[in-house]
Image (cartoon, rainbow, N blue to C red; front, side):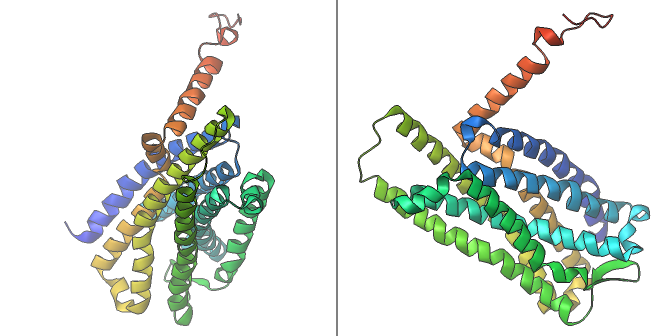
Length: 314
């Protein structure tokens, strides 16, 4: 069995599983991060990240799966408008993910900062909504050139050959690494702030203890999120750069197989957050249990929802 056949089988059977479990996980994460007990600016960024992850799986991953496995229903081979919109929107939502992760890290830095003025930024939920919208707008504008530089050649939706085909991989990788640098800088700053706080007086009121415990759990969620995202997304961007530097590699079966694997890992980075959060953070597990209990009470055990066979409600 050659690599192209293995790659086709992986795309046919692996992508649907990633989409299925990722969709369930992201929907549950959206419900959890909208709970009143997690009403913090940091939760808004996690919420936006979950919504963006859901969009990646239901739009970008599904369309890629259909185009690879079911060639008869691939409108990007005939419609230039759909071809451009698909590639453009795919690059936008994939790159929004890293920027939102940087926003979470900066928010945690502000929350742990001893300066009261800086710390106040992490308590403004409305500011978080503005930042999320700004990230979406900037990323959409940054990739707007793709709407004019994508074409169809031999029934394949692709970048215009020449300079632009080599420019975009470097641009995308640079756009990916900018948030990563911010994550590292503000992540180290957060660690420094937390270590400095340990030398201060510990909170004495119950409210302060509860707030500190919640902030610590959110910081744990951020840590596992960053580790998973960087480890799963980085190989894809490396493959983009290699493909731009050595164009002859892109036509080989080995490179295509490797890039398909890195793309599957990139999609996986948007599908596993719920499961990793559930395993690592007790606060997340508690909120999940409360959510499930509430759903059970509302939809299964509530007497108002019980009906007789003739349709009469108790």
